[in-house]
Length: 168
Ligand SMILES: [Fe+2]
Image (cartoon, helix red, strand yellow):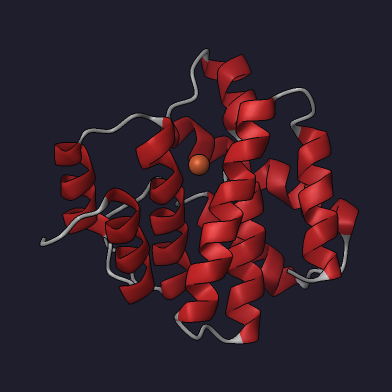
């Protein structure tokens, strides 16, 4: 994590002020994403985009709750990017292309089909590593998601070590 990401992390903590579970959630998702991205040898630019997206990925939740009365994935995907853009602009230093890519990822962080890029893939994997615990998933649910979404070598390795999956 560099200074720019640390500033973004603080801005997001401020945005979610008082909502301890959500702050804890994105800090963990960011850390898994950073670990997997570096392990998978992402280039510096992609790593920065991935880490920023991981910090901001659930930013649409509060608005989704206000607008739709729930925080389902699709509502978050719809409402997240605009909120993210505000925070990225406030923190500064992100290029137009970086901002657009980060916002695209936030708009697709509950889209599991047709995943074509490492940043998108790793964001989904990192989010699930945290959600598999926070949502109290059973082994069947974990294995189904593993099969459907997990592709990165080190994400699979972390999931398997975390849940002691011996053979899949
Ligand atoms: Fe999440």
